[in-house]
Image (cartoon, rainbow, N blue to C red; front, side):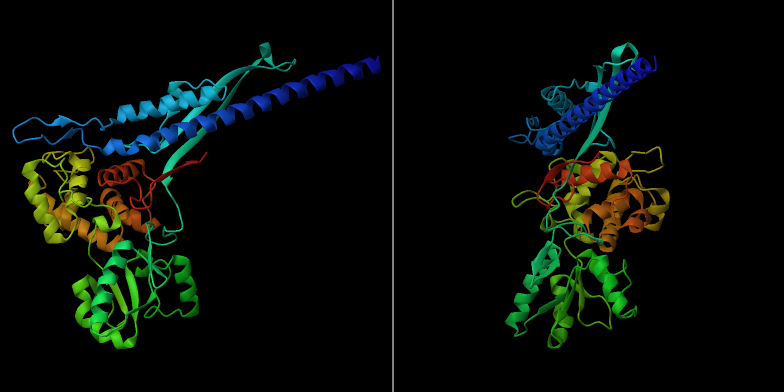
Length: 428
C-alpha cells in the first residue's frame, strides 16, 4: 500500500509539473505576442506621426476661393485607429487575438507616442490542479516612439538636443554656425579664434569642480551655463580685446566680467537653425495662423527675438487662437496666462490678444535664455520654471509632455526635431 501511495503521489506531482510547465509556456508565448503587437503598433505610429501636424486645409489657389482639404492631414482618432489595427494584425501574425479595447495609449495628449497592448487568452492545461482544465494567461507590453539617441545628441546636462563640433568641441548647431561667422570675421582681422571648451555634461563639471572648488572660476555641478550647449570658452588671450569689441555682432555676450574668454550665445531662439522653424522658402508665420493675428505675432517675434513659428505653434496649442479662452485652472486669453504671471509681465488684460502675444513672446525669450532649449522652455511655460529646473528635463506630467510634443510637431519635428527622427523601442 505504501508503494502504491508513493506511485500515486509521484504521478500527481508529475501532472502538476506538466500543468505548471504548460502555463509557463503559454505565458511566454503570450508575452512574445504582446511585445510584437506593441512594436507593430509603434512602427505604424512612427510611419504616420508627421501627418498629425499637417494642416487640415491648404491655402486656396487664388484669393477668394475656399481652402482645399489637405489629403495628408491625419486626425488623432485616425492615428489611434491605425495603431490599433497594426496591433491586432501583429498579434494575429503571432498566434494571439488582440482586442481593440486592449490597445491603449498611456499619457494621452494630442499626439500619443506610447502604446500599451494587453493579450488575454484561455489556455487548456492538463492536471488536477486546474479547474475545468482552463486558465487565463495575460501579458502586457509597452512600446514608444523616442528621439533617435545617436552619438550626436547631448546627454547629462541641461541640453539634450543635437550637437555640432568645432575644433573637436561640442556645441548647439546654431552656436556652431554663429561661431563660424565670428571666426571668419576674426580671421579677416588677423585673429585666429580657438575653442577651448564648449558643452560640458554635469559629470564633466563635477570633475572640474573636484579639482578646483572655487565658485568664482568653476561653477558647481548642475549650475554651469556650459551644460546648456550655448557657451564657449575662447582663446588665445590675444583675441580677448577683439572679442570684447565684436562678439555681440554675432550674438555672443561676455558672461562674466572677470572671464574675458567666456562667451554665451543668445540668438535664434526657436529658429530653423536648431530644427524648430520654417524650412527655406516657407513663410515665417505658418499658414494655420488666422490673418488677423499675423501682424501681432510678427511684431512680437521681432521685438523679443523669438521665432514667429514658435509663438504661432504655442498659441495654437494654448487656445486655438481664441482670445477669450479660459481654462479650468484659471489660465486666460489667447496665450493662456495665469493671473500671477500676467501681472509679473505687465499684462493687465490677458484677453487683449495683441498685448498677450507680446507678453507671451517676452516670457518665451526669458525661458529660452534660462533653459537654452526649445523643449525645456516650452515645458517651463506649461508646468512652471521650477519643475523644469528641478530635473533639467521635461517633467513627467502627461499634460506637459503632450503639450511639448504637439508644439514641436507643429514646428516640423517630433521630440528633438533635429535629432534625425524617431526610433521605436520596447519599454515594458
